[in-house]
Every structure is written in C-alpha cells, then in structure tokens.
Length: 118
Image (cartoon, rainbow, N blue to C red; front, top):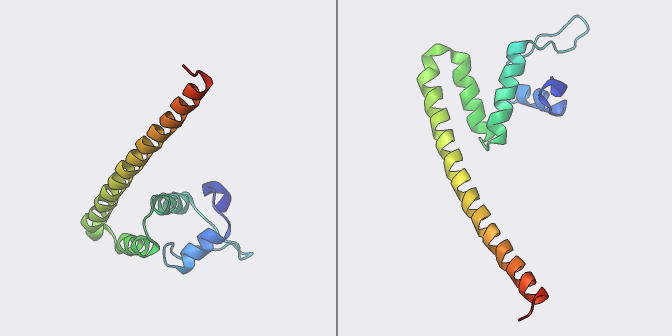
C-alpha cells in the first residue's frame, strides 16, 4: 500500500488507527491485504490531506462514507466547502507569487542598472 500510493508504511497504519481506513483484512501470515478499492480510498485521503483538510474533517468524511449513500449530500457539501477553501488559498498564493515576481523584477533592474551605468 505504502509503495502504491507513495507514503511511508506508517501512514496507512496510522490512518487505520485514526478511523480513516476500515480495518484491513489479513492474509494467513497476518499481512494486511489491500484491494484496489482500498488503494483508491487511501489515494483520495492522501489528496485531501495534501490539500490541507484537517484529520478531524477527514475522519468526519470517512464516517459519512461508511454510513452509505444516505450521506452523499453531506459529503458533497464537505467537498464543496473544501474546494472553496482551496480556491481562496490558490488566490492568496497567486497574489504572493505576483509580489515575489515584482520584487525579483526590481532586483533584476537594479542589477542591470549597476552593470550599465549611464
């Protein structure tokens, strides 16, 4: 699992203990047995985490998912809210990028002027 999704071996175990992943079945030797649906779910959780969704909200989402299709509206609402938060973060990052570009341009112009004095 860890190799399939690019995380440490600790992450899936931690998420299982945190209630984000349902207990995983084991083979006769006691090794966890992951199926494609498990991998897709962990990949989705990883995406949520990488986009800044707190573990508590991830747990809430996982709880809703475990309750079945009657919670689809609540899950949509959570994802829409998270998407809005992402849009706000992206706008802030773009503003920061623009400010950095302006500062870099200022420094480059200063260097250019010092190399080519009038």
